[in-house]
Length: 53
Image (cartoon, rainbow, N blue to C red; front, side):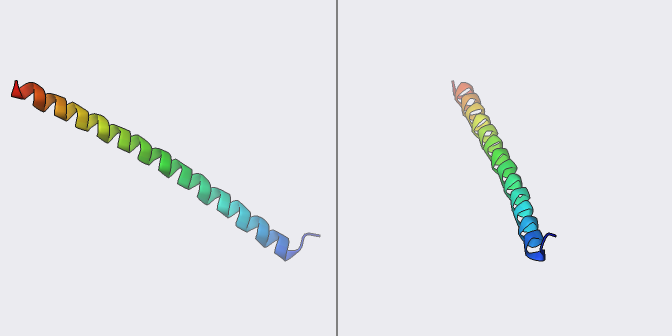
C-alpha cells in the first residue's frame, strides 16, 4: 500500500511540473511580444525617416 507521505510527495511533484510548464509558456509569450515590439519600433523609425525626406 502507498503511504500518505508518498502520495503527498507525488502530488507536490506533479503540481511543480504544472507550474514550471506554465512559466515556460509565459516566458515564450514574453519573447514573442518583445520581438513584435522591436519590429513595430523599427517600422515606426523607418516611417519617420521616410517622412522626413
